[in-house]
Amino acid sequence: MAWRKRTTKQEVGLFMAWVLGLALVSWAFQVMTKDTIWAFVADAPRQVQDVGSRMFPPDWGFTSEILQPMWETFNIATLGTLLGVIMAVPVAFLAARNTTPSVRLVRPVALLVIVSSRSINSLIWALLLVAVLGPGVLAGIIAIALRSIGFVGKLLYEAIEEIDTKQVEAIEATGASRTQVMAWAIAPQTAPTLAGVSLFRWDINIRESTVLGLVGAGGIGVKLEAALGTLAWPKVTLILLAILLTVVVSEWLTAKVRKHLI
Image (cartoon, rainbow, N blue to C red; front, side):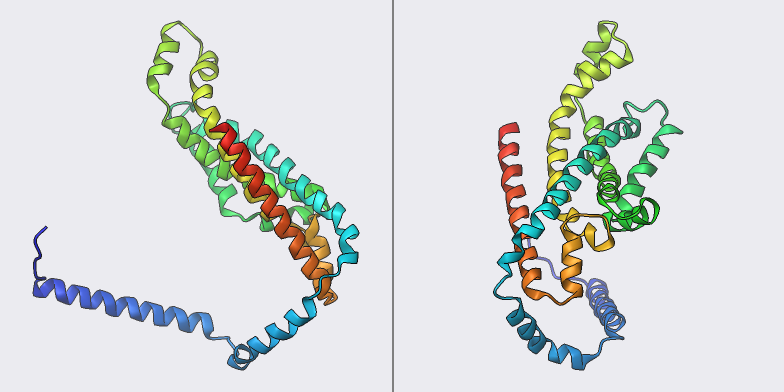
């Protein structure tokens, strides 16, 4: 492509865009830092060094007390993902244009469910559910499930809309009912997507479930909050290492299962 000099109008437009961009960045920086106490910021390196020195070595004697909360965290992520997938599948079929009973009535409601689920963080769901159900693992499981509906539902309904229509037409040509078309033409095409998305969501939920205990929804977060509240930094270090190990193991399992599926 040949090089062409910008016109005067283009130069002015580019200059104004840079000015507006810099002004926006400057305004955003002022908004973000209006309540900042810069003396604390200047003292931050010393505070980090002080806290870091208190965090090591980890309190290895605390290991036996975090095994049960870590198991709860794993169960919250797994059961929450399973429940979320079970609820997301029908929502996805109702949201897809080629499978919904009504594009004007049912599809908007299904899309609203998906958007609502994706708009609210699992920590917010946990806060609401702890207030309703009380503290415990059940609130964490349902919070993870409600958050997972939107993620799985969105990716699944998009996959349903992109299926090969020739297979659907072939099944319909045999005189199959709508249910049979779903079972033999649509479900087999979307099953790999559902498996991959569910696995990916479980991997994400492992991370999210580690912090739900901070609001009383069970898991290792309960121990983490208690350790932070009492400034037991060696225990905090051990808990963080346990969370890191859990995430690494979940990554390894996810990679293995994906490789098997692909």
